[in-house]
Length: 110
Image 1 (tube, rainbow, N blue to C red):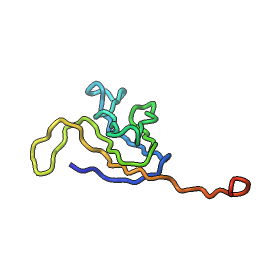
Image 2: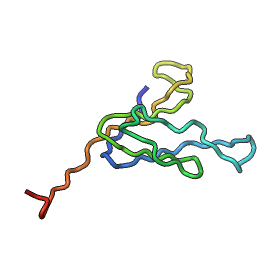
Image 3: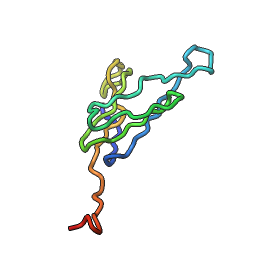
Image 4: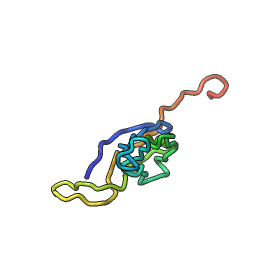
């Protein structure tokens, strides 16, 4: 099962918004994420840095160059099947590249 892919630079952030549902059926007062927030397959590369107070949005920061996939525990429909299975489902495939090099000027430049 594949996920949408994105490329970001070290230091950039990705926001993931989760679908919410009622914590108590019939009550719109308490909403919770329908699925757990995704986790990174490589937390050295991509780290969850912030969760919104409403528990609906998580922000992930690209820390180092490389590749990581954000996955969440959910019922997935694998390609070519008609039956969903509870497993780690890919949410987004993230390639992290080095940021642009800032040219040195003045006394710092040899």
